[in-house]
Structure formats: C-alpha cells, structure tokens
Length: 276
Image 1 (cartoon, rainbow, N blue to C red):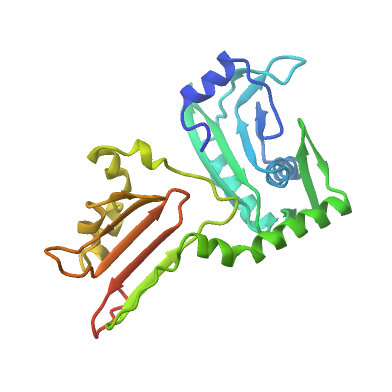
Image 2 (tube, rainbow, N blue to C red):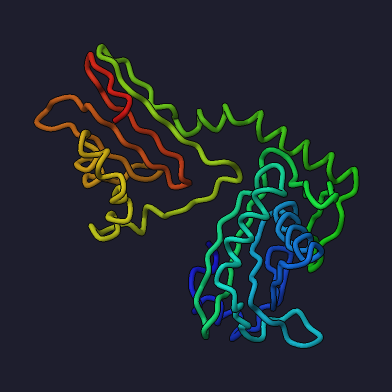
C-alpha cells in the first residue's frame, strides 16, 4: 500500500502532487447508477492495464488542474464492501488489488492499489461492456486491438518464465531426506516487488513483524513453527530459520524472501498429519 495513513494523503496535498499514469484522484463515489459502476470498473481496470497504480476516492483536485487540493471523505461506510462485490463479479481475470478505508472527518477515504495481471489484461465483463481499458497519462481510454494483443503477449512471456523464477528463488526447498518431508512453497504473482528490506531488520521488535499471526496458533501448536519464527536470521535474500539444536539436523526449515516468496519444509517421520 503506497499511502498507508492519512498523513501520507495529506502530504500529497501539502506537496501539491498531481495525478499521473499511476495515481488518480476521485472526489466522490456513488454506485447507485449502472453508469457509475461502469466508471468505477474503468478506473480500476484501466489502472491495472496501464501498469498499475493507486486510485484514491475522497480526494478533491484544484479547480482546473489535476493537483491534490483537499480530502472529501465519503459518507457511506459500506461502500468498500459494495466495491468488492462489483469488482468480484465484473472483472476477468480477477483483479489483483489491495484497499483500505481511512477514517477522516466523520467519513472515509478509500485507497485502492491495483497491480497488473500476469494472466492478461483486465476486461470488464458486465453491464454488456466486454471491453478493455487502459490508463495513459491522466485519462482512461478503450484499448485498441493491438494494445490487447501486446498485453496478452507480455502476459504469456511472464507465464512462460515462471519456472525460471522458481529456480532463481531456489524453490521448492530441495532436500535429500531419508524420512518423509512436507514441503510447501509460495511465489507471488508478477510483478515481483520487494515488500521488506532485510537490511532494516536489526532488532527483535523488527523481527516480530514476521512472527505468525495469532489466528494460526491453534494449528501451529502441533508444530515447531512458533519456535522457528522466533529464531529468524538474515540470509542473502531475506530471512531464514530452522530448529537445529545441539548439532542435530534440522527437522523444520523456513525461508522468507524479500519479495514475498516463501518456502517451508517439515520432517514428519513415518506419519503425515496433513490436517496440521
């Protein structure tokens, strides 16, 4: 999330930051009419097809310009849920996005970050639209046939390169065990971007950000994961840990890459309890 709090939004105003290919302001948002819902979809898919960026709902521009002027909070607290429903049912491939509602002056400012799709350009598949849109400069326009072809070609190249990316991340974790191991790996969708900087993680309080969330405690109590996540250490590309002690071989290995890729390998002996 590029703008995580109100202070970040206020800095856009203080510094008179204008809209761009990757940043758009919307002073209001109403979803009652079909045309308004279509406009919302054009804004979000156009941002994704244009390379990705942020749309802020509840930000007014200076008159006659595209420069951030003031916050204009939305009054309806349920509108984020409405947006989620509309996007879920009207965009293909599924929109890769993150969003947050920031409380401000009795209302809400919605910040939506949209990522490009590695499966091909986003299409609006609702309201008899069936169209592709792309943000260029400060506006959104229908994509030409050639632009759509080019976008699919880029997505195809990214898909074909997934095996290479797995190899670059040394995933899945490779073992030569005598006992059975359970190995689970994850590689984010492209574009891969660093989500943390290992060089800035120097204290225990920093490492605590990477401990497993409390909702998983019930499952993790059957494993050594709580122990391992509290022994994280730096390695060349992120953070890693294992449960090796007193010269014994590790039975649990955890690796977190700076770009969000992750690998875990756990030795289970003769009995594999998948539900754990």
